[in-house]
Amino acid sequence: MSQEIDWTDYPCDGFYDELVAAPGQPRAVVRALLADLAELGTEELAVRQEAADVSIKEMGISFTVYSEEGGTIDRSWPFDVVPRVIPQSEWQRVEAGLKQRVQALNLFIDDLYHEQKIIADGVFPREVLAKSVNFREQCIGVNPPLGIWAHICGSDLVRDADGCIYVLEDNLRVPSGVSYMLENRLVTKRVLPELFEHYAPLPVDDYPSQLFDTLAALSPRPADYPQVVVLTPGIYNSAYFEHAYLAQQMGAELVEGRDLFVDGDDCCYMHTVDGPERVDVIYRRIDDLFLDPEAFRPDSALGVPGLVRAWKAGHVALANAPGAGVADDKVVYAFVPEIIRYYLDQDAIIPNVPTYRCMEPQDLNYVLEHLHELVVKPANESGGYGMLIGPAATAAERETFAAAIKQDPRNYIAQPTLKLSTVPTVVKKGIEPRHVDLRPFILSADRQQVTTGGLTRVALRKGSLVVNSSQGGGSKDTWIVSEDVASEPLAASSAAESQPASSGQVTQTQTQNQSTR
Image (cartoon, rainbow, N blue to C red; front, side, top):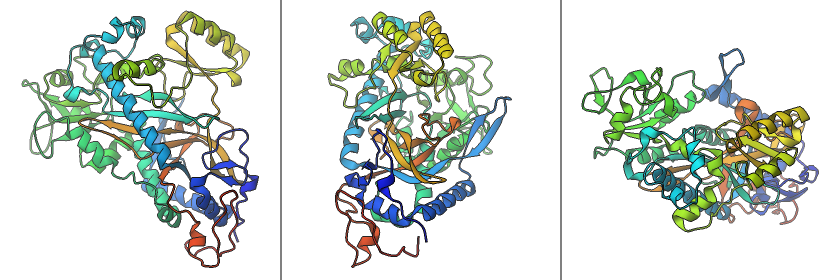
């Protein structure tokens, strides 16, 4: 018989745990869930984890990593069966904050490509824009549909030891990961059906239809069902699984650059067996510089010659719009609270992580003196690469980074080392806390929509703060749950003699495991 999980032995170690307030004390929204997981036991939970791993392989859920030899390796998506749970009341505030943030960023991007009022008014430094690697002069004066530049945004959220949620960074170029959010839910339904049905987390499976509606709203031709395509770099791209998955779920064509062409009428067409077919909206998963060899890199074999010309003419919509990445810059991130205040006359609902701007002399001096305490990030790296994690770095590494910061202060920001929140995670010895972040996705067109939860990424290595899958991270299903749902454990609700757990302690029910377990 599987050994019950004893939550009194679960260590919090000074971190905020999303499910356990203190050893033996569950957070209110998961009191019943933790009692059910306790009864399920370590051995049975390991069996469910193994079933999840098998399901992922059978479903072909994978991601691609690039090897040191220059090749690619496909790996099964790493997934942990214990869900991360967020109360619905808290999520409503997060959702409002994300909508506010993306609305302000879209106004900011549009302003930069037009009058640049925020610079003229002294709120945003001209030198930051001058050294932006993602500002596209080719986009100056362009008016994308509805004035929206970043139609799909993935903002990374973290919770610190104080229990507060902060925005860690914004991803507005080609944010990835939403397909794994959807697949995580499907796998959870497979391996923990009894728990999933009992606690009824808010659904996420309507995202593909929401994405299609967002893209369709951008179409230059009025139609009930415009021609929407997903433009991928090809099978060797690390996110190709997601490109194919979203195209299939939306009922859209998955195309590469060679499948499209721009004719003399400045319209974009797709090659089909029945001849050319006009394309209305392109959900592009190709970086700006490779999108159109006429407008950007002439040596690009991935893009479509003349595509930017067709976009400027208003004959095809591009999501996200070229140039949206100007707001991806981590130095721009440091100004987002001011950006929100400038365009919306509001304070940010979700705060930034406290951030030092190395371009400012006072901040620069502080950062150089406290490198051993800080995380330093270059402006435009992603995936956890190029950072200095001060407490884990050697003296030589800190010295090298200090020289780089002094040489180009504008290219760096620094932040305190966060105590990322944790979630119980299945390990060989049972269950232990692992650090997590969260990437919700925000859709913007004729309306704004936010995924109910998002992609929870988990650092599977003990003590690690790196959640990226390419560096040993994995993911969890994210449940948004109403506080008044499932107030008593599944076993207790199905056995008259069982009593619900008290509000303070996770009690161990004596009811036998259900046959489904």
